[in-house]
Image (cartoon, rainbow, N blue to C red; front, side):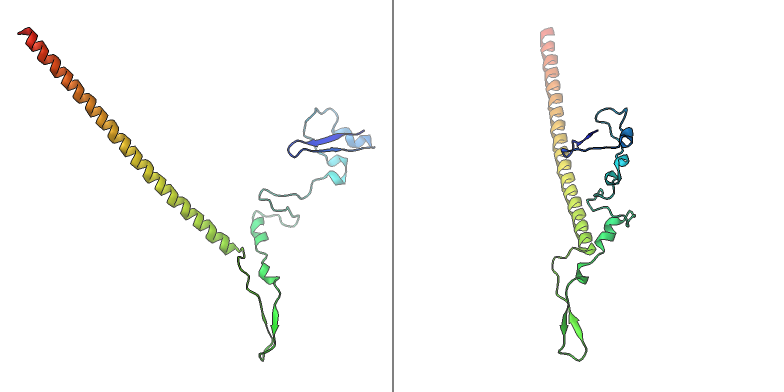
Length: 167
């Protein structure tokens, strides 16, 4: 039998040849486009590894929530070649300076700066919206006062015309 395996998200399609009918019994009585475990097809179809939610490769040895921090703690400065200095009395080595090195401290500073920038932007937007709201409230108040004064004028005109007509 030759099942056709298709993954629409990536457009990947694979047609495989399976000689043993027992391996396919997990797919019997399943509808098209139904998810099914492919472990029964063999060792090559068992899923190990891949990428996690943070796009780091999944490693079998690291099974903690702080996987990202474990991966970030590997320091490049240890791998940089050191030059021996033989001019002095003691044998010494000199390491090259590494610029623009991404360390946890740099990431922390970047995160703090982004938070400060966000709070500043939010305060400015809040001040602008408060100013707009106060302008709209003032305009609404003025319109309301104008309508009230028009009503008073019309009422007083009606009252004065009714007095003159009654006389």
